[in-house]
Length: 211
Image (cartoon, rainbow, N blue to C red):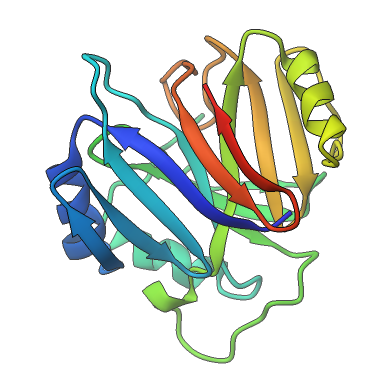
């Protein structure tokens, strides 16, 4: 599942633009008074000004080269404060064979850098912002996890690994919806999952509007 475009909403547009452009050194490809486009490898993220009193936040994972996790972690440490859980600032998943670190942006979005060791995407140079390859996960919050999983299966997406009534990955190693039950605490965060609108364009599937 290749996530080609992701549209998210925020109440902190200027703060996010400054963070991603100046703090992380990423490319803002275009902007208006109501939003800006951020190029994350092969994926375009669109942040749009929300029109409500809420402050939306999301979970998003960025894929990095499998052999550059330690360098990517140091790149992050030099720019942000890493999130911690049980006194750890990184995690390894045996089920997924992946390493991850997490941090939050000024709007509370939970950003993950993940190296999937099942993917042969090694790089032969020092890690930089340009080595963030694509968005490979987006959190999808719902009142009914299994119902949402069934809806995603009907459009051709498959479960990936173990699922439960509160957590279900759907897609494949290249791109996943992380379907979680509302109020579930996000991994490496104290924030409880809430339902906010988002739009995502998936290669060979099309554009989906959720939330």
